[in-house]
Length: 438
Image (cartoon, rainbow, N blue to C red):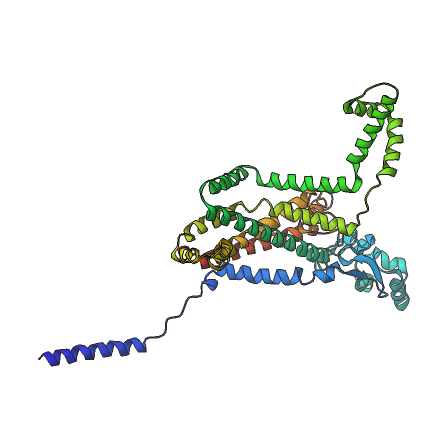
């Protein structure tokens, strides 16, 4: 009986094993594809990066005229004012738009068409409908997204501005992530009073208005560059010194504030000394390209230099958890240096939070850059960015006639990019945080 029961149990176990082997394999869940909005955002961002960053060398290169000769200006800044404010070519034109498009037609081509069809040039220029309009319409300048006030292609400027905005945003986010990671890791690894002091600094900075800090840093940096170029303070100080020396020769003692008042009340003396100061301290030569690079670098540092606070707190919390783990204690016991422990043991375990918060920091940096450029503090014309393009478009909205495309398309691209980046950030957060994916 015992053997029969044992045989029955073994047979049942074998049958269960066979059934388990017959069961279909369970499909493994890929955490990176778990978020549908994140995947959509990734696809949109990929297309945006290819369109803006991939075409950046082309949009920044010199424009070429009809004869194939270089025009000496970048493609994003090339245009003819006579072709200004033309609506997108896919939109219907009203009489005002038709008049502008007719006037922008090349006169030589217009004369050839007029001679070919036996009509006058003036008749073609005055055409608003009918067969005459169909004759001149193929000669119109075409802009897929319209043109701005100076006749520059809005599409080209959007591509160049998008490349610049994305580059500044990504670079500022990388700077922010680097500062926050190093600061938070140092505070947590050292611990004790140093940790408390470093975190109190973060708390104080958290209490200050973020955008105000960025604006102040950007304005102060621009003022420093302007002072370095013009040397205005050096000239002013030299002029006060000359006034003090002149009065000292006459037996009168003046303070520097008195010398400032003398210069304010004697315009002729001020003009004379200013001319001498300009000869003695000439303005430094700074090319437009160098100044543009300085402005962009200043904006990048201003944004990245104040947006690392959240990253520092997150990394500090992670390092506090990891530094007492057995593998870190073992590395410390065998004599590994703090740098080696951080690079070989802590950093690989921090990559998840770093990637997630870096993805969420990029849209914030792009938004800050666009906001500052909108205010005229960030990227300055003629170099385009989505922010200053939106500012230019806002000025084209009025009660008489609005050129809506100049505001709509920059805001559309900016909004789609920021929304896609937030979707990607949330998707990565779900992928790296199992608790959020349940």
